[in-house]
Length: 580
Image 1 (cartoon, rainbow, N blue to C red):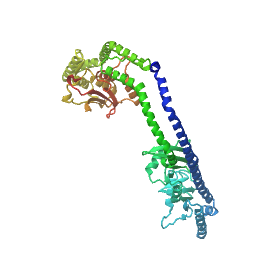
Image 2: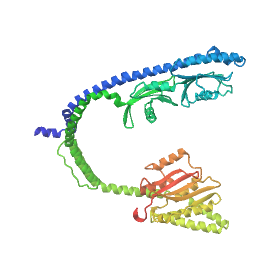
Image 3: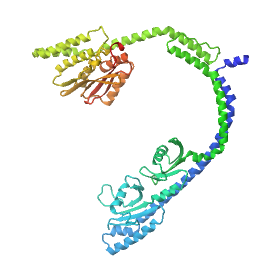
Image 4: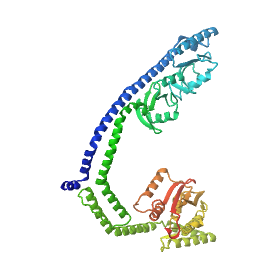
């Protein structure tokens, strides 16, 4: 009994160590042996065989194509070709025929030098003649077709040129870019795509081999979509010339081998299903079943040990946390052992007791703080509009414009009446919009020749929404002060209402200069700050008040208006009356 008591008082870490030592040792030996055997087999098959075969094959193909290119360059220096290019305009027809016949024989001999050459074509500009080994009845070769291949050299790769599903090697005398001088000659070797594909097919029957670059691909693949997926995931950065990868595509595992040739500006990709390569590991199936059976027994025993040591006290502690989360602070969780869980339970009981004592004071303090901050933000509205309104009224009286003076004095009275009514912190949205209209009517008189205002109607079913006072007028005031302050003519201000997903957006937009992207980001950053130092007015004032009232998903958002200036969205919930 004393031994079990001492073990019960041990910390969880020693308990877990003892449990793992007793249970996991047999699994360690079995896993190590199986893993080492598998690694040895895979390394031997992949690294030593596949990689070497791919490198050897690609090196052979690269040398063969480079030999074709070298022979082509030698052909350029042929005396008959040089004579025909340089003296073609002064040679007799008989001399031209002799030279063309000689070149035709040489081209046919050149074509037979490699199985990868399909046809060779030569165009000499001085005699305007095409010499080709192709069957012109089936595939006519013209100057225009050769020039098209020549132009493709600048967009579809070099030295291998891809044009109209055919692969070429092109040589011509250099001509300065932008020069109107015609190319003196063009010597084009068309590579046999069928021969290349046959060679690629014979590399490994269990996989797919593709020769490609950015513009074309030739290979044994019958699933282009699969090739593109593997290509995008296997191709390394420009610093590496080869790569081996194991990847999963369309719920299947593949082994992929990639090698790039800088001289050909092309790469070779070979991929095959992983189960084809790892087939030899099936000989260890008996060991695998033994591992599964052993693992099952180990998991059962280990799970029971974890349940006894960790899960049961944790489940009890989680239950107590849920009770506290539901508002029940009359919980107690004694624990007799002196391990880490005993410490957690004792600290939990202490924490619940402290929360129970402090919750009332903390809650009341937070409410008071928010109320004080709201009052402070409401008091920071800029009163400069009052002075301008009286000056406007004075000017109208001096000009005997009684109708406009009456309109200004009426709206000014309603304006003062609204902002000096301190009995309520919240008002109906209808009253708030009416106050904003009074402000706009006054400004319309002042800026009648500069700013055109479009004030949409508030839908009747939204009249009773309860909102903080003075959330619309400060945004409109911001437009007159900043958005349209420098607008001499054709200023536009538009106020509209938009309902979506249980939210009301009051859109205030103008055609002023707006804000630069950096200024817009700075304004959004200031609006999203949890606390603002110093005074906060206008957009930030309203945004902060709305978030204090309704939560973080409401407030003011800013963007560029379709009118060209700034768009401010005042976002509030579409709830009515006392539902807030």
